[in-house]
Length: 401
Image (cartoon, rainbow, N blue to C red; front, side, top):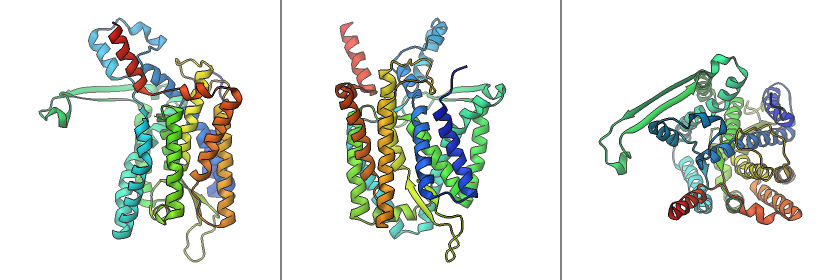
């Protein structure tokens, strides 16, 4: 049996304990925030190690345990090609455009809340987030169900059909459409439970349910997304650094949208379990998911770089594997320091703060300092998970042939 990473187990336990505990006892919101966010990042980044296996499969490498299947027919080979894992990788132009696209979206929401009925806008947004949340909840809870539950939960169900269509290819794509469902009994149970959860959340909008969905968004987003390279990550962080400063300090837009939008785009931290005497509601502090997920993408990339440096095997991927993690640990320490600084300034000046103002220099500075001290700056900037590099390699190979 593979050894477990005790810190990873502790991270998951902390997330669950804080979610339950903060409903029963008053936990100082600063302590709650720091512990919860750090645990989410540690867990999500280690889950993202599975991307290394998917990236290897996408490059055409084969899992040794599947060598026995090499003698399958051409049709099976084509199906395997089609079912290669797909993962999202950010491109340089995407990173450069991200602050602009984000600004347009943010300002659009601000105008919607200003000129349309607030309840109607929140209704439309809630429907969207409930649908996305259904997928995130299912993906998050299916894995522990399958891993910890009885064997019958691992029984797989697969159904694939081809549907011919007569639409032009530029509209409907190539015909026939290939539609398939691959799931286990654990997936079905997780989907059913998640559907019930989302339905209750849609009706109540309770802060504890909001946090469950927010945590699942963070875990799934960081686990499934790759920045591609350190350079792209740095471009994204620097762009959002100025984006956050402008929209928080320069306008009322960011704060207005954050307070008006009633959806799981933030994690809520109760300042006290005693409702306010005037409003009858709990007083809450909040942290936007972007302040967790965006730096989380960067930290996850650094952890996979650590795994690359340690020559950690792609097959099988073991998220509990023990290997040196200097870049991940230094950046995580920098993030915690930046987050603590954000909270300190916010409390002292009693004003909302753009968290990325402190988090971006902390994450970039700590990782660069680590690379300089270790004499690995060139290696850090050369590391790449971009699919484009693999395509160029394939093109060169074809030309050589």
